[in-house]
Length: 251
Image (cartoon, rainbow, N blue to C red):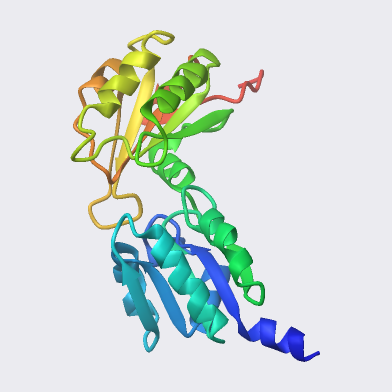
């Protein structure tokens, strides 16, 4: 009985915040954050939520300190605190859920609970219209953890299979031409008139969306806050909205 009580007190939530706005967080995520004593996360994400969760202890690390961040969260939970590790979007899609669980075997008494959130693919799709109504692939262009050769292979395979493709992290200061490279790969399999869309700052101040062709996307100046959607052969531009039909025969 004592072991059950101890583990209950050693709690670590791994929470997906959604695209950024408080209104896009799940009720379950809000309840967990209200319950938490300590909230841990990347500095930018902590700044998004501080005003909504007053009186909490906040611990942050900068970018590229993910292992240290997860270790910090597990240590604090192991000390008997109820903690939350926060991520943007969904905690299990390019978030911290996997890394926390990989490290958690060092802290067997910590009860880790993963709480999902709205990822950029679904949040951005809603802004653009309905671009991912059919099968789609999500590919990150960041080569910090994945070799660029692997990323390029995935782009070839997804394009050849006629998936709608959502691209995360299309560019950065060091990868300013990666989106252009991705478009050049996809143009080997699709028309330059393929309908595409971009959304910047999804769910945050300055949100902006635009529908364009694949050829136009090739020269588009994206940034690290942009999510890109490349349609399949059936994707349409309907009154400025990006729509991928599911194939209903009577429409």
